[in-house]
Amino acid sequence: MMIHERNDKIWGHMKSDCSKCSGLCCTALFFSKTDGFPKDKAAGQPCTNLLNDYRCKIHSQLEKQKMKGCIGYDCFGAGQQVTQVIYQGQTWNDIPDRSTEIFDVFINVFKLYQIRYYLIEAASLISAQPLKESIQCLIDENIKMCHYSPESILSLDLEQYRQRSNHILKQVCKLLQQSIDSEGKKVPVNFLGGNFKGRDMSGADLSSKLLIAANFEKCLFHGTIFLGADTRDTNFNNADLSEAVFLTQGQVNSAKGNRNTKLPCHLDYPSTWK
Image (cartoon, rainbow, N blue to C red; front, side, top):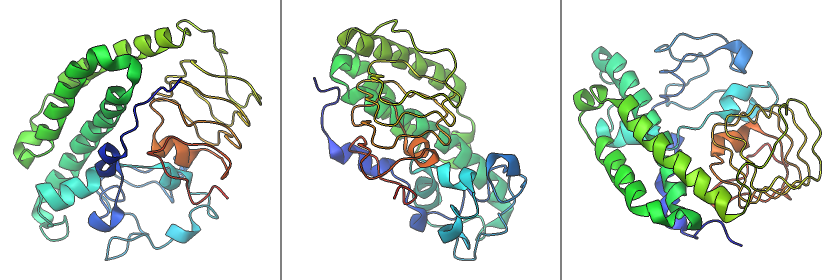
C-alpha cells in the first residue's frame, strides 16, 4: 500500500540553495562546538569559515573535521527566500544597519518553512485526504506570510500559527496510523545506541524520539513517523525509508547510510553516504 501521492513538483522550493543565499545560517544562528560546529559562536556573528562570497571555506572538509552540526543543518529553502525575495538580493553586508533585522526575519521565515514542509507532506498522504482542505489553507497562509514585509514578518504571532498547524498534524498522524492498523503500536522506550537491525518499524511513531547512534540497518520504515526525531549518527545502511513520513533532509544529513538506503523521492542522498 502506498502512503504518499506522488507529486515531485511541490518539493522544489523546499530545497536549500546556498548559491542564492547570503550565508544566513552561518551568521544569524548561535553555534555550539559541542553540537558539532567549528566553535562557539554568538547569534549574528559570521562564522570564521564564511568567505566573502558567502561560501564555506571548509565545506569539502566538514566530514573529515567532524562538523556534524554543519552537515546536519538544512533551512528548507528559507535562506534564498529571505535573500532573493524579501530583501530582493540585498544582504546583511549591503545594509549592515539592518543586519539584525535580516537575521531575525530569517529565523522567523525558517520556522515557517519548517512548518510548511510538514504540511506539504501531510497533504500528500493518502490517509489524510479528509483534512486536505484544512491543510491547504494553512499552506496558503504560510506562503502569504513568507512574502510579507520584514516588519510584518517580525510582528507575526508564530506560536498561534504553530499551534494550529500542530493540531492538524496530530490528526494526520492518527489517520495515518489507523490506515495501516498501527495506532498505539508499542515502540521501545530507549533507542539510544540500540541495535534494531532488520526490524520492521512500519507504522511506529518515532516523533521526538532520540535515535542517536541507533542501528536500523536493513529495517523497514513503511509509514513510520519521524516528526522531530533526533537522528544524529543513526545507522540507516540498507534500510527502506522510501515511505517514511515527516523525515527531513536535515535528519538524513545527520544520519549514516549508503546508496542502498531507500529514501523518499523528495530527499537527496548526502555526499557523506558512500
